[in-house]
Amino acid sequence: TVYVVADEFEQMEVLDAFLQANGPFRLHILEQADFPKTLPPDTTAVIEFVHGQLSDAVAATIMEYTLGGGRTLVIHHGLSSGKKRTKGWYKFLGVNLDASPDCPHPYGWLHDVDFQLVNLQPNHYITSNHVVYSATATYRPSDTPSETQSLPALSFANSEVFINHQFTDGREKQVLFGFSFQHPQTGEVIQQDRSGWMKKKGRGWLFYLHPGHTVEDFKTLGYCQIIQNCLDWSPEK
Image (tube, rainbow, N blue to C red; front, side, top):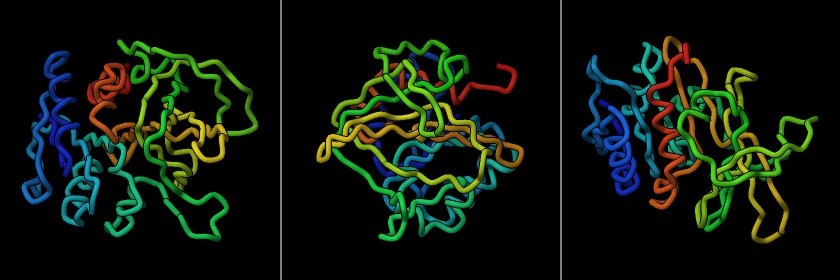
């Protein structure tokens, strides 16, 4: 069973339908008030998809589960500025979302944006197993200095992007995806290596995927397959 803690449910229901049709996983979708304080031993993974405030109690359960050998996938607004009030959550994820005026690259978000999810690890199981990419992106990794490349991508329309997620854990993360979009006000093309990553956390594993603002995001079959790949990936694959 994959336990999901959420406060928006239609997106997770679309994902659940895909997983049931294409693999062994079934989602058990719960509000925070119903999320167990201790996860059962047969828990396959946890998905955190809370848009609003993530409670300290739920976060503590997820962190304890992951550090003890579990698998946690944070999707889209599961990592957002509101989570700064959740005890230990930013440190656990190894991120900071600084939006203060004196920050050289302040965190922010944009709605109703078309963007591409760009595969930065074409040979990795999570990015490649049964994933059909519908587009190609001309992309220059933000880990400069680097050269512009032609990379496989998935396209998302009228969604939301987060810019300037700041990593606080050095090179602990393995970055899997970047994003590319044209800023609707300035016309600037923004590309950042921040749309998907994974890292070892204690005895467990932690994953983050950026898309997921709209129901339509989860109707992109390649994206749902990427999520399934996160759930069944192992270090041997």
